[in-house]
Image 1 (cartoon, rainbow, N blue to C red):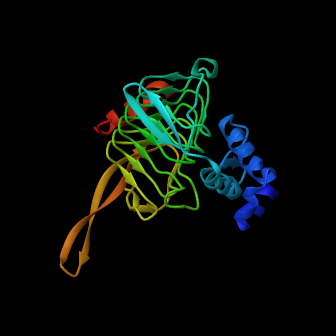
Image 2: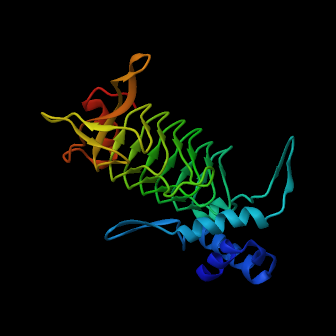
Length: 268
């Protein structure tokens, strides 16, 4: 499949041939069933399978627009939706929407939310009300995406790496994580934290600040913050994220997601 995808990506005319178009469709089916991932963890960190992203983009090109009628609603789109949640072992509350080509593992709960193509949502994760899991995002086991969380995608606009939320993370209400930022295992983001590749993530829990960009270290407790920055028109506050401590190992995993925030008087 990979050879066919790379060849078709270099020459889109090849997609007119069934052999290459079928290779694209097989990749999407493998993504849908979780047998293939846009990004996967290895001993040396996460590896992005760029050719899989290319297959997704070409899938948009070969799919035909069609109309769905779900009275009184009408939809007109290229992408099919996931079905048969009972067999998958997924709880999908109306109006949860997940596109075909997104993998949703067993015991995931989808409140009224949206999961885009190429995403991977692992076991026991909660995608809460009006949360969005963008294209190709990788969400680990036992993650809680709170109400209104926005996890960015990689296809529009095209980004090099997907957003990665590792196992056991708690992402508070209205957080935004985009541009391929990685949140490591069991980290906690308080409400309204915004993380991009340029966001300064500052550990203020010690005697001296320690700065990170592009990732949140494991088990960090993070809140929104700001710092002064000078511009031609004057000095203004610029948003950042503050690491104010670490989750306590003494706290039970199932309750510490909330307790870690309460320990530091941070809202969920």
